[in-house]
Length: 111
Length: 118
Image 1 (cartoon, rainbow over the protein chains, first blue to last red):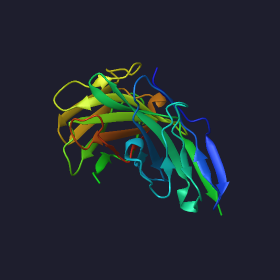
Image 2 (cartoon, each protein chain N blue to C red; image 1 turned 30 degrees about the vertical axis):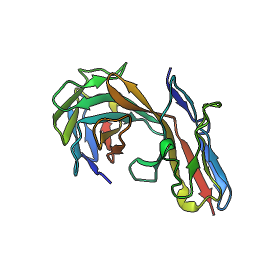
Image 3 (cartoon, helix red, strand yellow; image 1 turned 90 degrees about the vertical axis):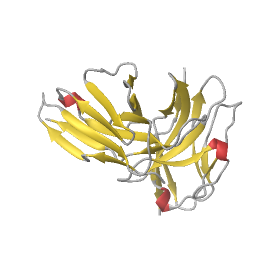
Image 4 (cartoon, rainbow over the protein chains, first blue to last red; image 1 turned 180 degrees about the vertical axis):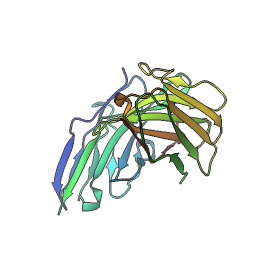
């Protein structure tokens, strides 16, 4: 079964501390994985995708197929990083690409 | 980036009435739109996939007759919650693809609609 697991509901850190939001997935085949972010009172938006191997707002995520993980990392958290973060994978089913979301992790960065 | 709007942003209705939520892609054509439901402090659950000019594809456990989806044009999809009940109260979010084909197309999300059924 295709599944995305984010084990932490809440991650609380102080400004300047490193951050790692965990994401594990279950998928047969080669997965396409994403991180979406939802800031307070704003819509969901794409943060980064694994195929791009990019760094957005200081965040990076590496796909580890051996561990079936796609953890989101940032070396120095900022207060403006406080938001809900959702890990997601693309599932091709019924002729469509559908996003399957994890439960989400709330990141709270304290001053 | 591409913009998706939803209307209304929030609606309160009486039990037994029907409510229509619109999802529009403002600056691009979307052959496929998705409808999600989000309960408080929970993740987004895909309800259905909406395709222009054809019937929607519903996820398992989602009642087709309860949640009517119409994708009348390449820029508009509507979700109608029929005979709404308090348990239908939720945050409904739509998204739309920005392009066609390929193994991946970015989904752009609407701001969501908060439905409260009294």
